[in-house]
Length: 235
Image 1 (cartoon, one colour):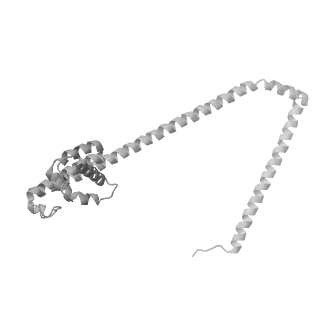
Image 2 (cartoon, rainbow, N blue to C red):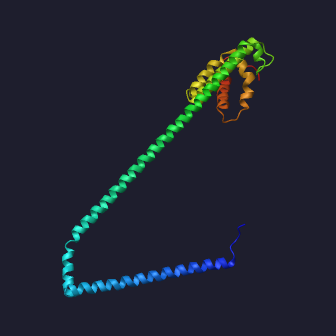
Image 3 (cartoon, rainbow, N blue to C red):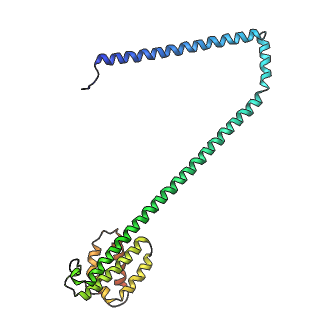
């Protein structure tokens, strides 16, 4: 079972750290002193070999003539460094652009998959509605309009399909709100559709206010109530 180290262990660790620190400082001091001594010895040796300090200074002035060439080479080296950095920066920008394009493609792929799933779900809903329209016994299982003759119920089921079609078009952006209003005005003149709307309006308005279905219901309801035509049935 492990636990906190004993006080003696902590003291030994602290002592070792202090010894290593002292040794490092001492080594640094020795190296610095050695560097100073070696530098002095080298300077003294060069002066003696060149015949004194004055002669060494004269030769150093000759070396200054090569300072311009040294500056040119330094400038070229700096220019090469700048060019290399610019190339790396450009490459990084290209990589970021490529990654952004890949993310955009992934987003579009997800959107297409989502649309495909919605279309499949819509197709299944159409098939189920068609079965209910053709068979009264099946319509009784999933019946949103109880107590209504089957012939009239078929009209309501078909009206619900038209609402679903407009809803899908709104979700996909195929129709603008102005275009949807035109379709809503055309439905206003249909007596069966107005009866269907009177029966299904409350259920649609019970949906969340930010949902596509609720917004479409508000749009259609506004057009049905404001467009001139036969009066809507009482609520």
